[in-house]
Length: 438
Ligand SMILES: [Zn+2]
Image (cartoon, rainbow, N blue to C red; front, side, top):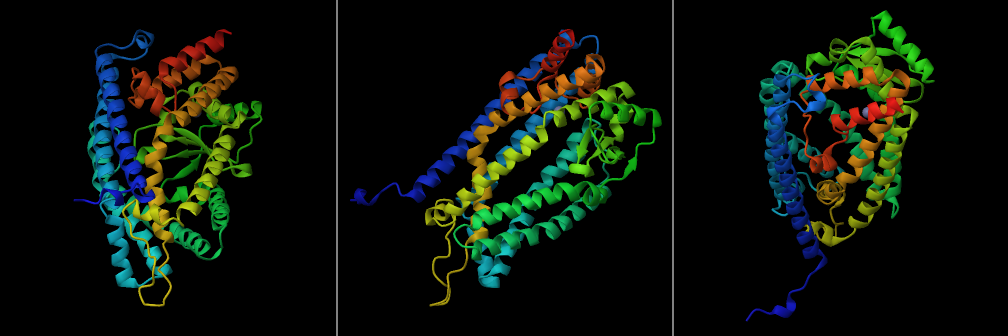
């Protein structure tokens, strides 16, 4: 007879069950939401919604529906693959096998830990490669958005891998060193390092890293430059320069953004945006972005990110000392030295990877919260732009961008609640007109 008394819900088993349950629930939720959105977009495909009938032609509307549905179906496939890969790394023992193999090959120490992080990143990148290729050269291509050549794509891949290694490995080494020798409060120091690194990256990225991938030339159109300068002066906003980026080298999707902070702020227009919008509309889009600055949305988002990462590091500080955290996720931590009497191999890189793999499985359920906050910010930025430039140009810019990016006008409301960082077009236009009337 089996000895039932010896069976118990150990912390390790509880973590395994919670992880498997959250992963399954998250995947089912994703499927359900994607199914709702697929149905809703298909239902709306036959006719342009009345609110947009004067502005958007039926073929453009149907292209948006087909593009949205194609992306959704691909997203479901990627989510399924992602769940399988995640199980492979964790409960099925992939990470454990990789760690043991590297311990065997390199012995315990900093070199082995960095090799584990690098090998994990490399293998994950390779697994994602077919999906990225399909997305760029099949999906985006089919709808006429892709402008990338295989040569440019490969160049990007090499550059981003090298940059990632150049920046990522020293950062990882510094965090591992803190984990190993900064004592019980290592996570506080690691968080400070992480925060400083992110601030530095925000400063360095626009001036030193982005030019590796794109050309930035000062805005040549003097009439538009004068218009934009006047708007920024009205809004009390100082920027170092107005730049045009060759976004059209890779994609037909249009955008505009601010980068940097403090006195290093710059305004960047995608060349695709300038081609699609009139000067009045460009001004309105910029006024929307200035609205984000006026309401300190960027600062608030950063503060929220730093607070969440502090909580994350504190949690990791505790979890990394619990044996069940490793065994519950399919990894055997080093508890005893390989050589009798020698110190146990460090588990810091393992703890980092397991944490990065496991946390999103549980936090995915919080996404409506963040999406809601983001949509509220978008409404505020729209209201600011309407106050600065009137509702007409912003509304027409928005309609053009929706049409050119083939964004659906008929999303499912529940899907919107979960995923949309921007409110649906119909809601934004209604608020704009209400705001302009008031
Ligand atoms: Zn915005």
